Image 1: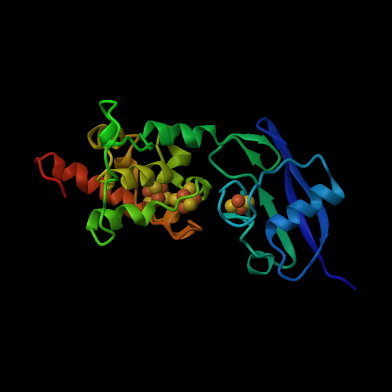
Image 2: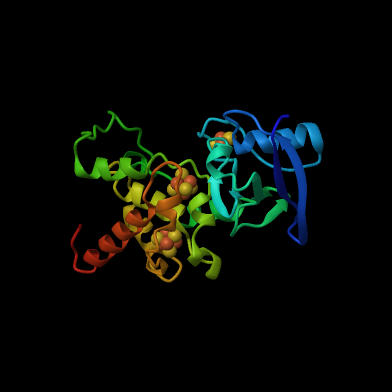
Length: 243
Ligand code: SF4
Ligand code: SF4
Ligand code: FES
């Protein structure tokens, strides 16, 4: 007889809800996203959830699986299932639209507040750059920028951060990691504004260095280290030093 998984799925909206139980056939090499897709296609077409690429690139499929935020398209059931059970919730620290779909607007608003958009130096006055800016791959700044650049905006770190839960204004690990990436991008012309934007109680100084973001990032990024870099740079900047 084919094994089945017992899957409890959060159903509801921002006003409240409850878990609903489903039974899903277990398959070899099944991902958590496969399980959710089975429920929506075969058992309840009204289930709301989000995904796009299925290959770990778009960052849209993250949920809380058995108590921990994860990307679901690259999470194999066999690695997270407990006694044949899965419990699926929407990402924490974000408003719930419906069921497993969260509203990512506050997350990306904080990227904007942290000035997470590249501002090319060459075009600050509207001039078109004459040549590509060459940044040697071995330079320290380039390597510091590279360390955080593969962020896919999945929100796993944001949902795992206790400070985000306690302080709704806190920019959070992803936005600060993005800011640190751009602070180290020697082509960028908004360094000073960006450092001002990430200072203060809602910025990098609110981080308690608990490391949950770094432990859980599915891309192996170290937002906690990025935040430490911002704190260091702001500290030395008070003495007019760039470190
Ligand atoms: S290290 Fe800072 S940003 Fe990361 S989870 Fe802990 S408090 Fe949040
Ligand atoms: S830093 Fe990692 S966990 Fe956070 S949004 Fe980017 S990819 Fe996701
Ligand atoms: S569906 Fe794109 S990262 Fe999971």
